[in-house]
Amino acid sequence: MARVPHMKIKLTPELSYVIGLWRKAKCFDGLGVRGGKPLLEEFAKEVLEKQLTTPDKLLTEEDRVYFYHTAYRKFFQEIEKEQLERFKYLNEYAANYLAGMFDAAGEIDLRGVVSLARSNAQDEMMLLRLGFVTHRSGDRLILEKPLVFLAFIKNYVKVQKGHKAFEYVKTAK
Image (cartoon, rainbow, N blue to C red):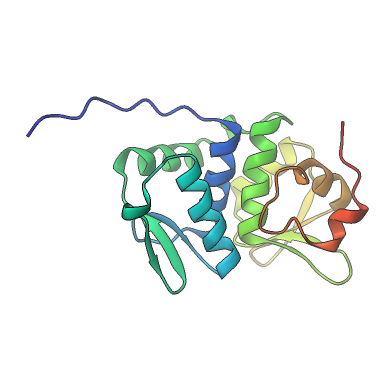
């Protein structure tokens, strides 16, 4: 069997979004996410648009969508492991990554409390280094200044972009 040449994958802001989404909603089949319909549809749309896979290789089940690709899986895992280094500046990469994480595990409750579920110490440190102070409540990180955080991710959020809280957020420019 002919050996496939090594694939060089480059991190882009757009790919950062997909990795953020995967990071907080990953399923353990291949490279994919589990969750509600809007999340699954967004992940499928993103990976097809970015040509990470083809429609015939995208597998869907009731609560998950995934594909198999060793190089991308390894790359996603590498970015996850290096997130403190990769996302240390307030730029498009970090905004997309956080938007993906927020789309997968973020919540804005009725009192306007903004939080990220399924968070660990590394997430807390990354947010703090970016200037977003949080406090922990179980596996959730509650953002101390929610409007500042929402303004940073506003232009990159996809699954939750229709949330009415974003109407009150001025975009930083």
